[in-house]
Amino acid sequence: MPLARASWLSGLFLAFSVPTLAHADGPAYGAQLEGFDYPYTVRHFSFQSQGQTLQMGYMDIAADRKPNGRSVVLMHGKNFCGATWDSSIKALSEAGYRVIVPDQIGFCTSSKPDHYQYTFQQLASNTHTLLTKLGIQKATLLGHSTGGMLATRYALQYPAQVEQLALVNPIGLEDWKALGVPYRTVDQWYEGELKVNAESIRHYERSTYYAGRWKPEFDRWVDMLAGLNKGPGQAQVAWNSALIYDMIFTQPVLYEFKDLKMPTLLLIGTDDITAIGKDIAPPQVKARLGHYSVLGKQVAQLIPQSTLVEFPGLGHAPQMERPEQFHQALLGWLATPPTRR
Image (cartoon, rainbow, N blue to C red; front, side, top):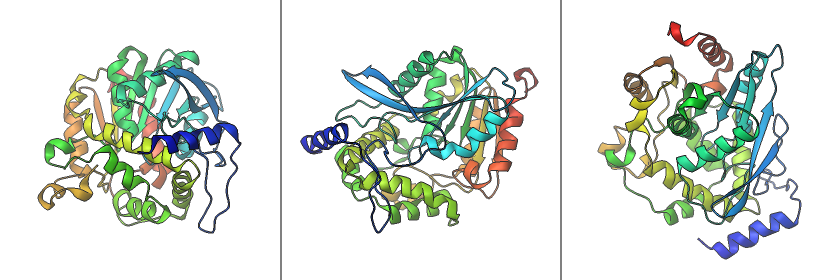
């Protein structure tokens, strides 16, 4: 990774305000997603971590109707941002919840450090520091995709601060490395991330997340990622993405699901086939990976206080494919006292 180049690009963003850049094939955005419109006001929390000052972008949305005194923290996935929770934020706020939506370090509107030791423990600690600053002592966590791995780690690390845990098609329901997926170095991940564009993102998401289906509204999120990856901060974005992929692959949470202490909801679109490294796995290994119709049931048996809700025919992001159906299931579970489960 050319750190000098990445550092130069990072400095460029500090020196200048970066507007959306017009390109024939779509917009380009700044290294902290400058120029992309979020559904609610984005604030930035500055804090010290690993010897440097970092900024975590986040949204803090008050209850739209009569507040119920409860808070929900939404944790985004690897190819998603806080903005992609837009319909869930609205549904939860209207139901009386305060909603906190951070962008994790390395993602979206947050800092892309030149160097950072990415661990789920570190990201959980960062989020805990933010919530403490906001005066939130206890919350429900809702994690999607990679955010499901992070929400699980947070719940294991801070069990007294987590009322309920909800996981939406979380990755990490299996240990890809143990199943035989070859290891990629960070440099190999970096080389691949430099080549990411709108076409490759759309193809991957359509084939992996949505079983070959596509909705026009998904294009906004493709443009978001593609614009972030091709902007002036490309090297910074790609390098941090590579480090994050290494974290995801090498830090399984599967073996600790049994230790979760709080009521946990699994919301599973059964057509999802997401699995890290499947593209380079041997055929016999690839055939075993990413079967969410099976994985959801298996993990539900591992978590002591689990409830499994499956969405037959939906993929990796049921909250985006069928928001009304998804939110009905989520809000019904959230409103049910734990003693009745």
